Structures are given as C-alpha cells and as structure tokens.
Image 1 (cartoon, rainbow, N blue to C red):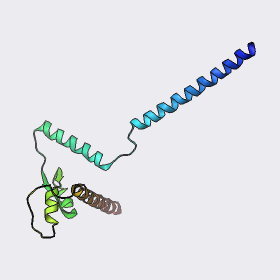
Image 2: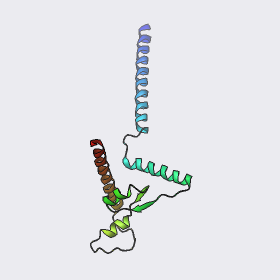
Image 3: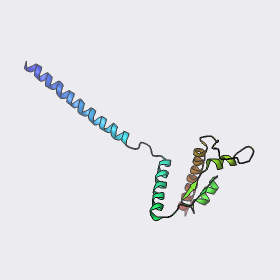
Image 4: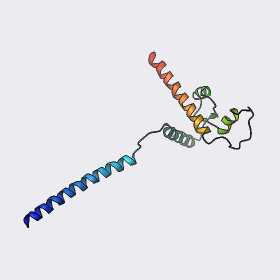
Amino acid sequence: HGLVNANANYVYEKIMEEEARVKVEVAEVQAWWNSERQTYASNEMAKKLWHLLKNHQANGIASRTFGALDPVQVTQMAKHLDTIYVSGWQYSATHTTSNKPGPDLADYPYDTVPNKVGHLFFAQQCHDRKQKEDRSMK
C-alpha cells in the first residue's frame, strides 16, 4: 500500500511540474502576443503626427502643409513644413492618359494613395541616407 502512495505522489509531483512549465510557457506566449512583434514606419509616423498635432493644439498654432506629387517636392518641402499632404485625386488627376483632370469622384484605384505615400517615403529615406553619408565624409 505504501508503494502505491509513493507512486501516486511521484506522479502528482510530475504533473505539478508539467503544469508549472506550461504556465510559464503560456505567460511567455501571452507576453509575446501583447508586445509589438514588428515595428512599422507608418506606425511611428502616425504617432509622430499625433504628437505634433496635439502640441499645435495645445499651443494654438496650425500645421503648415502642402500637397506633394514627387520626391523632389517632398525633399524641398520637408525643410520648411510640419506635414506634407498626399491627395489621391491630385495624383490620379495628374497621371491620366488624357492629361485632363476630372471631378473628385474618388474613382481612382484604392491603392493610389498608399502607393504614392510609399514612393515618397522611400525617396525621403534615400535622401536621408545620402545626407548622412555626406555628413560622415566631412
């Protein structure tokens, strides 16, 4: 009868050890799922814009902005503006086969603005790399 109790205690201890390991593993997975697994530049820019606008609101000032169509405009505007606007209609109106702008019916493809923002963003990153390289050479 004592051997049965010893085996039962042994099995119980092993089960408890396994449960403890599972709890630790579950806690690690939950922590991982609650953390940012990837950071996105768009998320950082959204946070930056939010803080910029909240700061302007608190100080009673406006954000100066213009619409940009190409990387040259963006790099020139970036020196002087808080924000730069990308208009889907403006972009689609300047890239038509007839070269005639039409009414703003938002009848351009859904990915027009994200694609243009990506184009301008990567151009800015390229410009940043060039400037950093120039500074490091001096």
